[in-house]
Image 1: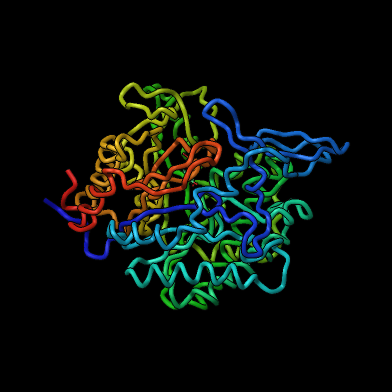
Image 2: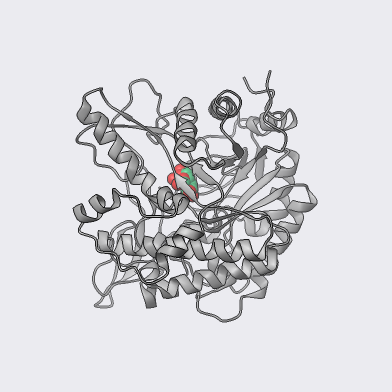
Length: 481
Ligand code: BGP
């Protein structure tokens, strides 16, 4: 029976607007995500708006906003980020569960508008800094390493409203000020940092702060994020000796549907749509095939002096990924990042995600072959609509899912000789789903009593997987089957 190597980090991961709540507390400003209502597997989440003529409206959350429209909070609408599962008031209790499960790492994101309410202030909001400082201290007291995502798919509303978010270079300055505030305050306590979350899956107003989603706006915004990430890595390395910087990418394994060379090439090209981002940030340059993507999508980037040298000089120390599923590609496939044709060899979750643990080992091998940098799996998990029976949740399906994915990582490390720093399971305490805004898509080791509309006591209940994971951490992976 094998273990993970000594020092392998095992724990969990969350994002502020899905978990934290405390919407109007402690001087927090409004985030792009605070305007996103709930949806479901077949109903897109909506951004609530005030239209040009002053009337109210909504738009699918990944679409362009109508001309002249601006995000606006509607009375009576339900916004999952406002309460989320209330880590804001439960953080001490929740960290005690992490401790009890034997976490050695906890990945969380800092709510940008809690530190800079509009993104434009000169001085940070001290209350916000204190909130995270207490969390970090509590983690360290319990021997849990903090892993901070500086920006998880979000942006302060004022930057969207006044500057069209990441399409403006002003947002680079605002982000850099935010990042440096975190380095100055927490640098002596935090070694691992992620500059951004899932750059290859970001889209539209809620995530990029842009009013339009056309390719030109989209890729220009991403270019600014590449520059911002490089600047943050430059400053972080300077200020924090020994710091390690990554950025996270959404990776699902991708397979051609058949051995028809057309399907194989289509699958390879689809893969490169994700590699594109890692190539820029890890190799430090736009790849040769960027030209083909840009001319097909009619994109002309505005790149100014120093942008490319910054990208070249300040690359990622490690590559981190989320991995939930695999996808199948054929010649006709047309999907963003996740998805694809059905795979007859894999079971699916109730949300249609193919369950494929071996795909994770495949992906880790693929990434290391390409980048030769340490890897870190910072999200993985199973979303299930589950009920409490006699005060308990018997989530043997989650135990199996997590066991099989962890075994795949262990095999990648021990058999394939892939360096992997650690694993943070997604949503250790139940939180709100990003894609649908639902509560019932639960990932946790700990159940939170709350429904899809925010009703419930918010009480926490340990699921069976809680006790299982405790054994996994205690044995450093030896109990995995
Ligand atoms: C990733 C995000 C997370 C998270 C996860 C699960 O894309 O980084 O924020 O939510 O996916 O997805 P979902 O919540 O839609 O089930």
